[in-house]
Structures are given as structure tokens and as C-alpha cells.
Length: 596
Image 1: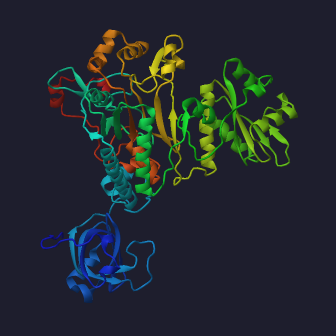
Image 2: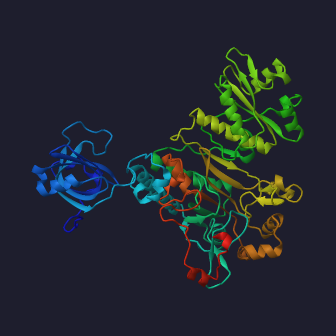
Image 3: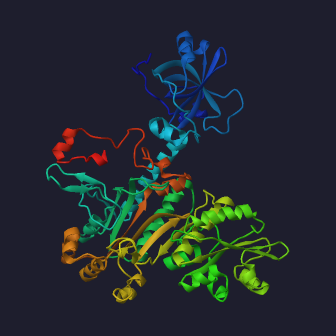
């Protein structure tokens, strides 16, 4: 039976009890992690948010009643224990913060009993994620998950303190806004007061933070909740948090500088990593050419090399065909993998096909300097030697080639280098490699829509020297846009914003908006731009992704208290769920049979 806390007060959290408390009486409270009855003596591991503490029950110390209650204890009972601290009689447990002490119980109160939990509450649980998320309130008791949530809180506090010291004001923006195009699908909220009309949940505070710059609040930030109805993966959730900021009277370098110092502070305080500044920068073009990705993992090499010139005269149909259609032939050097079995190479070929490759060509350099090559009959020994030399190949290396349109080649080799790095155990979670990627294309052409779309968003400032090409070669116009990348994951991005009305109008025209459509969708922003707009720029971090990388988690679900699964549902609360028909009637909404 559960007992009252009347007259009890916790004196210490578990790991607050130290050798300095030896001989003192303490009262601790928490969950029973484990209970071991050794006949006449019971050892209990007590757990709270701070960690574990060992309690010893002997009837001669705690009395018959408390000892009888101790015999009933099992995992996840909630208890209050009063006892005396003493140095551990046996060997010190070096793996435990309280490993040098134990508490000899004098009194026990069972505050709440527990059914047998559906899985062990333990670190690095092997229980299937679906079961853990169904009982997320139990999963959250695990020490590793609690550490993740604690670090998340710490990062939020550090960011707020740092940005406040830098003169930023924390300002909230609305979470029910007007739906606008040019992004992922919106989550819509029907209005009861305005039948047939809908709010949208914000995908970001973009328009509002620009309006704040128009309003004279020259340094804004918030920890903003954002929502996107898109397909999920390990580093995506339908609702997520951004560390969002905007600054006036600045250019690219100003934004990057303040954020480098913010990152340095966060990583030093949370994981004692001293981030060297300035952070390396690559343009988007350089990143794609060298790594096949606009978010390259810099923890290892295996860079792409363009060998199109070296193979332009070959009769090898794969290379020849790619070059004739305006593509390229590029390769990576998997150093030391020249003896890779054919079966494993075939598996890499299948992996590459998943990213659009029709196949992979390879050149293995044997230890004696001879070659094993999938296209050797189309090239002389001397030509193969020149090719290997251009790629830095040496005995024992494996050279892998992709030939196609540049986009396909980049996708294939960019992902292939990551797969090889995983296989070769080159991706160390405690190693942090930051990178700024700058000068993204302003626009990208959508074959599906038959028009240009904004690579970032419609309010991104073009590079001054490229703007003259906006009508003749819009795809060549670069943007004053930048992403911050960590270990191959984009953790944040931003841009300098358009603040001139004529450039903004032209940008919307290029994106296919008529003047009427532009006014209908973005009128409140365009109207604000008529009244004096300062040059401004901003950046937003995906807080969940930052925490995921700091703690070395494999998924952002491990750093969010109550995450959703791949179909955007919550296994614990069973959201989303049907609602009462009366609620739908009040909103003027009917559900079609096809939707049921």
C-alpha cells in the first residue's frame, strides 16, 4: 500500500550524497532500479534524475516493519528512504558517482507501487523503439535519455544567455499564421469564427522576423516551434524547434561571426570541445565538386575527382555516353581497399543504383602495382596508369567511377563515400568537423513544376554581381545564403534577405507569381517594405539536430521528450485521432468516405 510523505523532506538527490556526508542521516527519494535479497540483508539501487545510490537494509538497523517492506520492493517502486551514510565496506565502484559510499537504511516508505514494466529501465536499451515510444514516460526514465534531455535544456539556456549578452531580444511570433506557398506542406488549423478559412502552423517564423527588422528590433531571437507536413526520417519530425535569429544592418560575415562564437560556447560548455575559429568555408560549387554534397562530412577524405578530360577519348560506352550528354566522369579513391572481394564491390554497385547510378566502374591497384579493372579493354596500361596517378592511387587502393549527368554523379559518389566511411568505421561520433557552405544557387529548376523554385526561400538576396543574369540565365545566379554543417548534417541555415522592393518583386515574378498573387500571398510583407527596410540577415538552427550530434544519438527522437514516428503519429497518446462529429459541425467540416 502506498504511504504518505507527511513529515518527510528529501535532503539530497542520489548523487548529492558524498563521502563528506559519512555518519550523517539523509533522506533520499526515487525509483527502485534493482533490489537484491541476500537473506537477512537487502541491497537496493535507488535511482533519480541525478543517478544511482546503493541502499542497504538490515532488520537490526531499520526494524521489522521497514525490512518487511524492503522485501516487497521491485523495479520502479517509488520510495523514500532515511538512513545513515557510510563508506562502502567492499570495493569502490569506479563506474558509479556514488561508488565509494552506501546508505544504511533506518526507515522506508513506499510512496507508489509499480507493475512490472514492459521493458527494463536501463541505459542503452535494446528494446524495440516502437515499444519504448508506446511507453515513452517509462523510456524517459532511462539515464541516457535523461542526459540527452538535460543537455538539450543546457543548450537552450546557453543560447538564450549568449544571445541576450549580444544584444538580441527574445520575441515570440504567432503559431497560427496565414498559409503561404513555396515550402513543405502546411499543417492547417480550421477557423470556427471564419468558416471555410484556415490558419497554418508556421514552418518557420521567416516573415515575422523580417517584419521585426522592419519594426526596428535590430536583433531578434526565439526558440521557435515549427511544423512541416513532410516525409519523416531519422533527423526530421513534423514538429521541431529552431534557435531562430535575425539581425539588421549586417552582411554575411557579421552573421557567421556571431554564430561561430555561439557554437564555440555551446560545444565547450556541453561536451568540452574547443571549437577552433574561424570555421572553414566552402562555396556550394566547391562542396559539390569535392564531396558530391552540399552538406559534406569532413571527418574523412575520399574526395571526388573529375577525370572527364582524361577519359574523353575512350570508347568505353559508359564514359563516352555520359560526356556526350553534357555530364561528367568522376571518381573516389577508397584507400587500402584494392583487395575488396567482388561480392562486396557488387554490393556497392547495388547501393549506388539506389541513387540513380546505372552502374559503377572500378580500378583496383594490386599490391604488385598491376591493375584489375572493369573497363581495361577500352584503355591501355599507360592510360590506366595516368588515371590512377591523377587520383592519387597507390598499390592496395580501389578507385570507383560514376559517369552520368552531374546531379546523378554527385548523388552517387557523395553517398558512396559515406557508405564506405561507415563500413571502414571512419565516422567517430566524438569528433566534430564544422563547415560553412556559402553561395548556394538562388534558384533550382523543377522539372515537375516546369519552373524555377527558390532553393532557400523567395526572400533570399542574390549576389550583387550575378543579378544582371536573372533574365538571361537565372540558374547561374548565386545567393547570399549559407548553411552550417556538422559531420555531414546541416544543423542550420540562413541568408541575407532582400530589402529592396524592386528586387523582391522581380524575384516573385521569376518564381511564377503574378502581381496579384504576390500581393495575395505576401501582401503584408510587401506593404511593410514600402516604409523603409534595413538590410537584414538571419539564421536558424535545428535545435534537435544539434543536440543529436552533441550526444551522439542516431535519431532526433532520442533528444525529444515526446517524439512522433515515421507516419507522424504518437504511439503513446495515439494522436492523430478522430474527433467528435459535433466539433466538425462547428467548424463546417465534413469527412468524405474516401478519407475514412
